[in-house]
Image 1: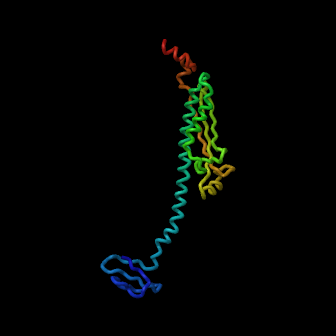
Image 2: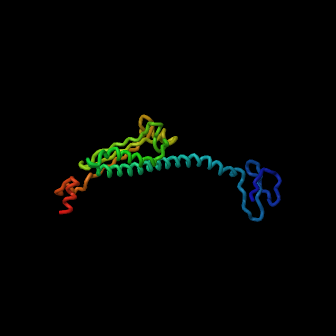
Image 3: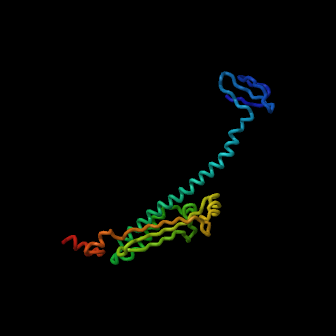
Length: 204
């Protein structure tokens, strides 16, 4: 039991100690229960916490912002890869695959919350920018997705000073993916890039 007090008379179970330099008497418990600190040290933990908590909060902000951007990039990369696979299967008979691939990309991007720290989305204005190129007959297919993220408080000022934000004060997250529309061996095959001829070649 700690019984450090400014009373001049000890409470039961305590024996007096010499006054400290401020003239405050601190009592020590008997029975080997430990020694209480002098009054100069009674508020040390509070002072340390007052200095440590702001630093801890700043560290949490520094760790939280990269985590949010990393989550966005993971979802955007998966959506871009899926769009490339869909574009590589596009044929004239299948109809316009660009719109279907774009819809699939936006559906996948729906897993990112429409919150400014994840994705800036104000009413009908959405910061998603999706660009798709290529089809089954081209050499490569590509998908480019761009997103805007509003920095967390305090970090936004630092990012602005470092020139990491755009004119709207947002961070720009950009992902680009490209892939071969067809495997390399197809160009050397007799059927070339015509799927209808592949089927005839399999039955020969």
